Image (cartoon, rainbow, N blue to C red; front, side, top):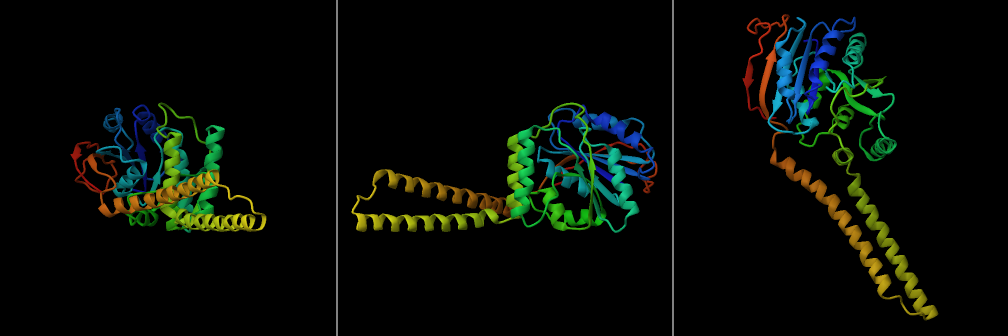
Length: 338
């Protein structure tokens, strides 16, 4: 296959068919790939997402398009679904795209065409021109990128997303890192390669509502920072040094006042404030240490990032393997763990 489009899905039952129809329309564009592989990864949906994908695979498709549907055994998270798609893809080039119709497959084909015309480029990433979000959420996201780039070991482009197309060597580099806590934006930045960015205007979501709440986004952002920098640990060192310095200065001031002026040393209120201050610092330190230690503990278990429940494949008429009859959509039961 020339291009493999990986589509992570979680409760996208109403968006599957429109996405397939739009993708088939875009296959008539001049920049469309010669052959396309669509890989739907159902990340433990509680609706009929996987069933709708299977029904869409039974309908007439382009002879240049093959479809693969992967159902995970439970909800492992988008990052795990993306890894499952990477490991199942066979394309010379690969891309990530959401199924909610906010990202147009035509843009993916434009990124594919750019890579075809520029062999010196390894990856094309799409950056949103504007976000259809509240002012508070936009403010937090903008400052997240600033904070990450200030303390992280790699630099993230502002408003970077997982919407991108890249070559097989980039995919191989991503799959060579089997870490459990995955942060794809950081992984793309860490592996390097020559990346070109383009801007795109996201459309409105076709149906349903996003599963990304502010709490989940905040946790995802903190996970990214912890995964790519030891700065929080250094922060404890700096904070401990600062509080120790303040304590020594305050002790000297109290002693000077007592010896020179003869005033009484402040008692209960001062002691209480100092205890609360150091208790807060200790709890902060324990929390940061616990976050890193917990990740080490889970990584040490070497549990799979995801487990596959079943996979359905429908090959295109142009598939090179004659053993796979065109239009075949028989399900293959599997319990594959990665």
